[in-house]
Length: 300
Image (cartoon, rainbow, N blue to C red; front, side, top):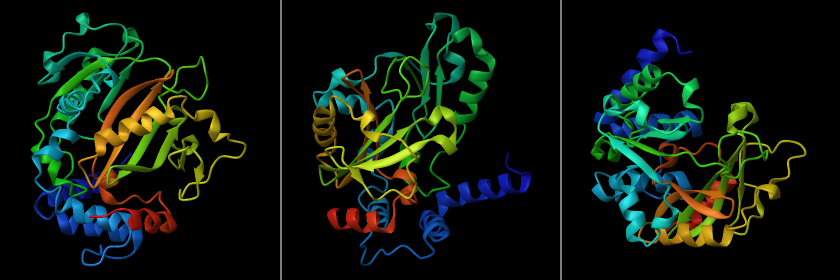
């Protein structure tokens, strides 16, 4: 739990980020890397992403629309990939519009304008309708992106989308309820250069496993987190990997950089989201070696 002072500091930083986004981003960058952002001669991945954040992607309505978890669905359809969209149940302008009794026993609620604003309801009778709506209303009142200087998020009109609950999204332990395995495709100039795999999040942050692979699912030594002893990462290789790479590249083709998140549903690809400024362009889990390697590949 954050102390009152920490909450006040976070609030000041969030507000300050809207009015002084470069200052806020550089402050965050210095906290993580111990240096200022190199805007003049960027070599590392995050320096180049910062250049995009305050250049091509700044106040860019198209980028905002694709970061929007509702409007991005139109882009996916225009790319001829409507079959990878998780079926939608409903859209709401506020949590008060949700008719709880009309929803199925399992579903997922997401606010469209930020990161981590998700509620996975796998057993409706174990969830409090009032608590769910209170949490959604809190998220809807927040202006995501100020803390990290991601000002394109302010172009998104907040809303809520309800999607179907999908079983078996690459779970680590078959037959047990767990959060889906995330496959995050780093697309540089329309090409998948690496994949960040995130698994086991339901076990808590300490037991969450993150690792990078290349486009062929061979391990890359660019992750700042150690792999758990005895962990066989190849067990998480999707049977539809080739198709996932092709899908990510099709979606990313018009952009210098975007991270395309996909899921594997028993060999069927499902779309997650598109992120243009991951971690606010401070990807501390990537080693310096990885930052330089990816920076060399990204042309801006």
